[in-house]
Image (cartoon, rainbow, N blue to C red; front, side):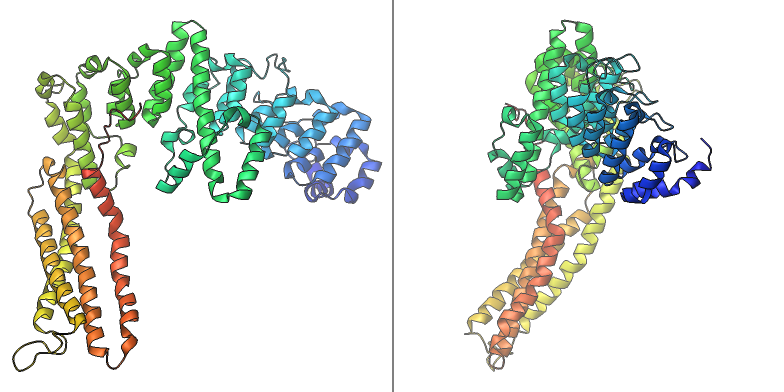
Amino acid sequence: MDIDDAIRNLPIYKAAMSDNWDMVEHIFDIRPDKLDAKITCWWETPLHIAIGTNSSHVFVNKIIERIADTDVRKLRTTSWSGNTALHYAAKVGNTTDAKLLVAKDPDIAQIVNKDGHTALKLAAKYGRLETLWYLLEVTKDEPGEDGTSPYTGVSGADLITLTLTAGFCDVALYLVKKYPDLVTHKDREGQTALQVLATKPNVFPSGSQLWFYQHLIYTCIPVNLEKASGHRWASFVSKFILLIAPCVKDIYNMKLKHVQTLKLVERMCSVIIEKGSHAIAWDVLGTAVSTAVKTGIFELIKVCVETYPDIVWYEDEGFYLFLSAIRYRQEKVFNLVYQMTGHKVFAATANLNGDNPLHLAARLSPLPRLKTVSGAALQMQRELQWFKEVEKHVEPLYKDTLNKDHKTPRAVFTEEHKGLLEEGEAWMKDTASSSTVVGALVVTMAFAAAFTVPGGNNSDGLPLFQSDRTFLLFIVSDAIALFASTNSVLMFLAILTSRYAEEDFFYALPKRMMIALVSLFLSLAATMIAFSATLAILLQDEISWIAAPVTLFASVPVTLFAMLQFPLLVELVYSTYGPSIFNKRMYD
């Protein structure tokens, strides 16, 4: 086409964009060749432009009728990249106009663009679920222009991997049931569907973080996969649940996806075993398991190992499954393999590349796993927890075995964690130093307040308000503030004067920090109570209602302190005294 045609055809372009058929109808009456003319630099026709807006439905309807009346094959006119108007509809999720095109030319769904993509594949690539379901109904399992079916070979593998990348596990389950051979085929990136699924932790239960109440709702919601297998029914259920209980809709959809995903994994593994080929099982299951270890998807690993137990010995970069769990610090996978397989003794005594398992546990965690715990001190504690856990499972001889660099596991740990140790020490000292100042101020105020009681003393040295109940509240609160703040200062000083050895981060330092923070909180709360009581005593005769607003305002700093420090305190308590991350019986 002449490049200047893009300028001359601007009225048609604008009409297609704005859904204004009346604006250009006379042009098509005079020049019917403009109906499928290439009006942009990318060889797009008016039909491409209008469908691409996903809003110019009147324009699309009119122009499709005009083109079909002359030559229906002109609906297949392609852009510079080989895309038909149906490809554009798939990209933007324009199901309405896709139905119009297919109704006039059913075979248009089989056409591939220059990249070898059908409209069906583009709908999966761009995450257009409704359009994807429709195109699955109309795209035939027949050879297209490229000589292959959209559901076989690399093209079929592309379809299911793109579907999984978009998170449409229900569609993938449908494809696996209808075209089981897709499970063993590899896409143009050389990946199988199961391997791609192993990169999607968010579609598995272990990859979804829920609050307590959300977990309770999740547990109680019933999901019937057979009834929910049809996308229309699932849509109806979602709308019904949204109508009666909007707060549980997202949780229901999450659980439905999890159930579909687990069913999909089981189906895939079943298809692989039915092939009766060790090579296929080793390749497909092995690559999936080695990928799932890195992402921590223990549910997928569990199904794969139950399907083919020997897969625990699949080697990835010189590491077996048990060793990979240590290498990537995936405690859920570590626990699962420990529980499921009787080969843990052999795995724990394996020696690869000069390092035994304890050397692996001594090395610094990969950064993404290290960052799952906040703060260098708690990260150091988690590293020690891993080292001590693996130490339980290796031969006693291995604890002092030298690797190829002539270093013991403990020496490797010290060298690898030198930087983290320094960061943890700096964080602990900074926190303790800042908090000590606050604690010391509270000690000073509480001590002084005990001898300058509100209202003063009588001639006998006794407090004037000694018989007032509010005075009793003041004196008790002041005493608690003094004792608690003194305790916090002592604990913070113990942190500042610690030797900061590696083992101190395992228990001693977190314990001192917990005691210090709790004591500081109690001292601040008691100080505010004592201050409120003092005002109430002094002003009760003049302003009797003063107690309520003073108490309200006094609670503000205490609440702020709790909000700012409570998350840290909870993490410290849970990490130090909570259930171990190495719970071997959690998958029964």
